[in-house]
Amino acid sequence: MFKKIARIFKIKELRGKILFIISLLVVYRLVANIPLPGVDLSQLKTFFESNQLFGMLNAFSGGGMSNISIVLLGVGPYITASIIMQLMTMIFPKLEKLQKEEGEAGRQKFNMWTRWLTVPLAIIQTFAMINLLKSQNVIGELSTPEMVNILVVATAGTIFLMWLGELITEKGIGNGVSVIIFAGIVAGLPGSISKIAATFESTDLFGYVLFVLVGLFTIFGVVLVNEGQRNIPISYAKRIRGNKTFGGTSTHLPLRVNQAGVIPIIFAISIMLFPGLIANFFVNSDKETVAQVARFVSQLFQNQWFYGSAYFIMVVLFTYFYTAVVFDPNKISDNLQKQGGYVPGVRPGNATAEFLSFVINRITLSGSIFLGAIAVLPLIIQGFTGISALTVGGTSILIAVSVVIEMVKQIEGQMVMRDYEGF
Image (cartoon, rainbow, N blue to C red; front, side):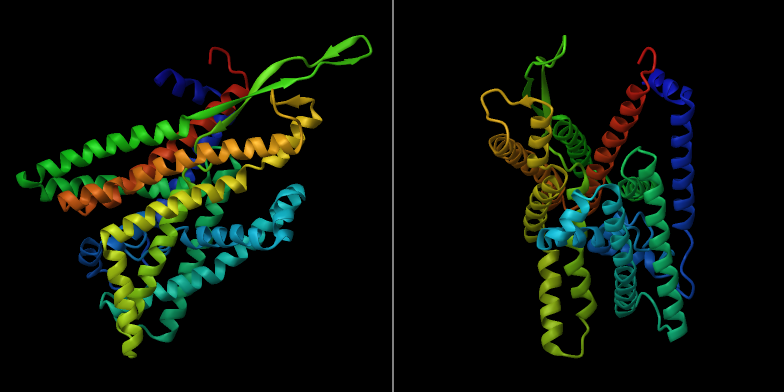
């Protein structure tokens, strides 16, 4: 491992990319510790420690909520905007054509619309969050100029993180949004460990040992799912041009069990947190009917069995959804046909596309169920042990391991592309 790390830093361009990304993450962590103006931080620690929903939201935002920093929402609004835009492509064929068929210019325009949608979502989510904290007596009354100031600063913080994420993505070492979330999770580890050490009791020993075992199993499962693939045999017909013969070789098309990577987990958490946040916002409404509905929804999402079931279903659905976005059987079939390739025993064209679609749906089913099971496993363990840290910890492990695997693969790909001697 150390030899590989040394080889990585011997390549000037790759070394520069890694150091650039590390510097951006340092800037992100500095910004995450700058509190918003006009906010009293004295009551926040107890609130986040006692509320499981906000504990998970704090972990998901990279710790930016625990001190109401200028990036308190993290990249949440950008993720929500991405989900909305991806769903819109299924409703409006022109958006799908813009994203997939119009090349780089079309993708840039699609990404620009996603960025513009992030701005109003960030304003709305910041307003809802501040009012929610006010309703829970965590934040005192704010004047209109103070509220406007917070909205502007928090929205600018989200846009700043979105920009950092895109800079990281451009370097080709991991997805920028995922890397930022990963950095927030890792930054919170020392504090979590010190808290566990300070509050440890002998009666909790079994629960924490079980948590370590679940963590190891989660790491094993995530690696297994991300590394698993189905190889589709591909043959190329012989073609004679002049005195030269082309083709006639055999290879394979690798189909990963989990084509979507860590994105389904991030999408699922974003959606699952939203109803609880809205419900908590209306719990103290003057209208009794609205307050009752809000209390019902809030209690429903605090129920571990309902939350776990919904979380599992969302992970499975988003795995299928994102796989459909990144994997196009028709396009792959057309490319194979143009290059003279075919799947043995399957006719080129539509038959090949249908075959690939059947295979990817079948392997995605097993991958999505396994990924969903790993995601809800900490919830099940928490139901038996009663330790709320397991829920946040299990989800964090799931995201962190997936991001690390993705980054390692992209770094190795860049090293192989340069044909580094001895690699």
